[in-house]
Length: 444
Image 1 (tube, rainbow, N blue to C red):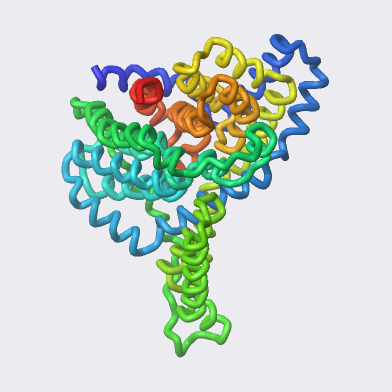
Image 2 (cartoon, one colour; image 1 turned 180 degrees about the vertical axis):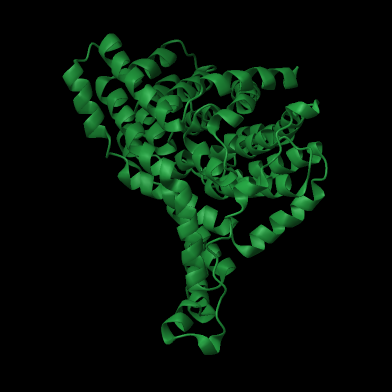
């Protein structure tokens, strides 16, 4: 049954799913039309909201790019890459390959979504290059399926943002601070995460085609230029003074030592996890693993190439968010879910509302900006904790990423596939993760 579902959705995806940028354009048109039809907003006002919103998330988009770039630069370092090649040797059968990639993806995304996306894509590529008989699109889809857990992990933007004073919490939650012990490390979140960690690898494994003619193996020629830009390091005696500085381990290690001192003092003094400190740690680890300033520069340059889709599309989704917020469409949608909620079902319906909103605003920070001001006062009125409400928004944001192609772009850039190649399989994960998370939010 699971295999049949995967095949069914894959056929639909290959026929109907266009490029991710086209998806963003279509969503823009849909929201534009809904704003006029439901909110009775004029055509000119919707144009104003769209254009005015396009640049509203530049600060947050830079944070997101850094999450991706620092995580990716760490993932392509030689120690991590060697570990991926070693793991790939153990994936000698399709079942092992799918399970290993999915587990690495889930754990990697829990640690840092940028790291998890890229390291799992690299692992999928190495496994497919080293082994025959593995359906490559499913292998890459398995790598992306780990992203469903990112907002329950250490780089989750909503849990981390409410662990410090934010504008939303100041205005609508009386400056309340919700520690990560009540969100990321709560029993409810950890229990859901563990069930997904155990079950998603099995779901992915069951989708692998049985018939040889249905298996699409990796094309080795597609990765022939992976190391084309690598230049051998000169001997020290042949270097200019500038090149010696660029290849100096001493300079890099000074930054690493100072960085670790800062990070240790930060946490010893009670500092909370935040996007900034996560990015800082991954930057320092990247410097440590690449060993020289110029090696890290090249790794960052290579990692930035995977951000093109995000840089292009983030303003469009910011424009969509501007239309949804300014026209009142987001409030109408969220308030409808609130109106049918009870204290027992509020977290579940908040999750569903977040899943819908995420299709139009695929950004944790943008999601929080849209839903936080609506859901937090409603939670207080119903007697539901801020932590449960924020967790529901976070889970909903991560959930529908399985059919929202925006964050698959960097992974697909590494794997050299198209979104239509993997979305049929990730749709099955959407259905399964939705069931497990719904039960967890309702009963735990």
